Image 1 (cartoon, helix red, strand yellow):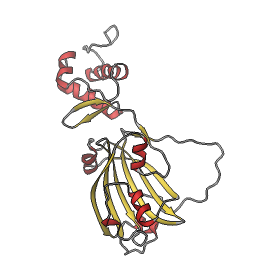
Image 2 (cartoon, rainbow, N blue to C red):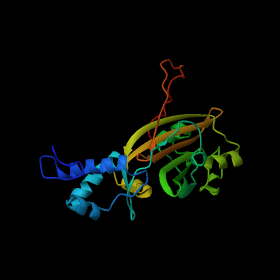
Image 3 (cartoon, rainbow, N blue to C red):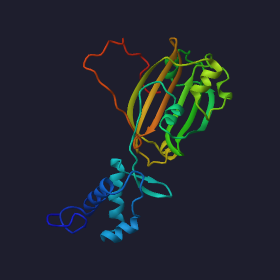
Image 4 (spheres, one colour):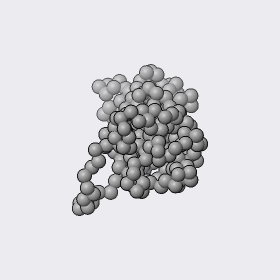
Length: 258
């Protein structure tokens, strides 16, 4: 592209979709604020005299990089800045309200059933003992951010499934059971979204997810085994690392996935 205008797509050794991707990158980084709609595929194809396939490929690369996000039925938008996901004991509801966002929750199912072996071990249940399982979709300002799968010790929270599961579960635990978690082990890993999770979160299948598994206790007794799948295009995690860290004891044996 030597000698070519930085805002033109030309014939040459550099693929046209790569040229267009860099043009769109400059547009996103210099001209459009977060959450802005970019021109439609048809408009971009006409403006830069390229095929719709070239436009779709260029946009897809920027979506993969997290600079753009597709909203089904509405178009493609510049991605909002990722929210910091804090690693401390706070409910999703309280966290979103702290950010000035309106949290909502959709229940995806709740039942008493035998949990995975790792969850039974984490909660101290016998191999054939049932736990209270809850699946929920968490949203902020109407945007789906996370899918949760929580398991609860049945003797610690009897009747939990009969409560309103569309609000803050931590508030319900405090009100009805006087449970306020004072300790947790949390494990974080990356994962690609399966078809069902992608559908719920409004992202493409195999899109990036941040997954958190947290086992929470009160006064040394484990009550909750929660796994949350967060949209990777909406969240990032920042941790403070000290050169000298106090020894916190051995890691628990239940640090795997549920």
